[in-house]
Length: 458
Length: 87
Image (cartoon, rainbow over all chains, first blue to last red; front, side, top):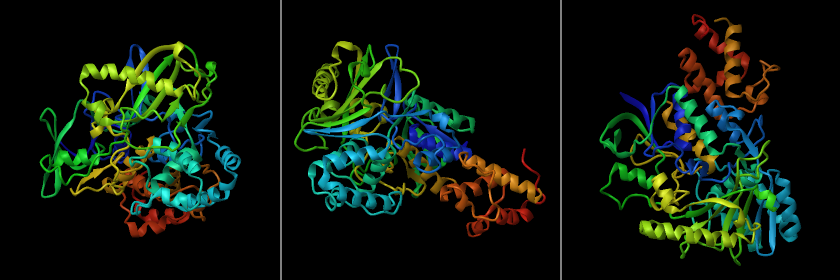
């Protein structure tokens, strides 16, 4: 059969696009190379325990029943209910820099008051920045790129405050080192500071499984272990895809969440020069399973974004892991009605993809454990010592991310250059997901929806 | 379908698109957008839901007829008069 649309990748964006298309009676098939769904934001089982990978939290939190905002828009578009996502709000997070801490919750006033107290001279400028953020239409697909650092420096003169604002936004979504496009900054700012964090009690699997169930109930096809080797085109039109096992699947349109560079390589593997370049921002994450709740040890924050250096450096490090800054997340510290099965601490730091990808398998296992200990050691500045309570440990690196997402360099937020209109040099081949440019979990889902609406529902 | 049946069909569609809205007090003479949080994405979905359920094609330059419940029903009535309510 010839599908209306074939979607490459069963992550958040591909599944959401699939739901839209299937709901409006398009024949659609999602192809996923891996044995499980999710891509960057996924889940697995290891030694009888459930783990999540990907973003620590879902941004753009809204209370159930909220009528406006990205999360509500997303649920409406997917014809899904608030209960399907079962999001619980965060307790409290913070940005911790040397000598200065800014707390924030899903109530923006917490951050606003914190800035007024810690940076009294900057608060007027910060409020002018807020006006600028509020009036900026970040979802305009035809926008021009502007440096966020430049915009911030027009309103705020203290470099520490600028870095403290950038720190969580970059860690949770910047494909570019050191600076962000202002539209990306606005999307991230709203999603984290205005709307805030949430998490389903069961973790990311809850949302992924609901999406798949919904997609299949609408008649959509999902094929796992079905990696796309080639996108076959004739005269600038994609006609079919060829899978790793040689199977050919015909389609009127192809929507790819595999990344811009990775997708164009499927179209033409012989011309690497003209391909867009992949990003190189990636992370190592240390996951500790504890025999108690982190709050039993006195750690009550949901997420801590820390930086122990004079300046915040968001870039590919020269060392295997950048130990100067990081993120500490406890999935236990959300407002659930009952405790999670065990205590968890996830500590994430910037990493050099090349180092991790080029290690030999034996060396890789050793280095993983070595750097796990070092990451935990530096995090001790921001969390009580939990090392006596660790029941199990897992570590993921850029190498893991590359394996599960297929993204070159194991890059997490995709290529520095985004393709916001979703178009490629091939007429009926479109991009969604990280390289299209809406970030975070809600952003990824909206990315799939937006591109599906714009080109594939005609 | 009668005008009253069409009105119910449109209400059902609005309910599906915007389940968090209270539609019980909807004013048929007032624009949907003034009474509900409906953006262009949602608006397009009204058109698409009608197409899905009743195979009715509404050209883009006729979307203006779908501003209020009253204008929507008036626009759809001649087009759906021989069409039964979908089960």
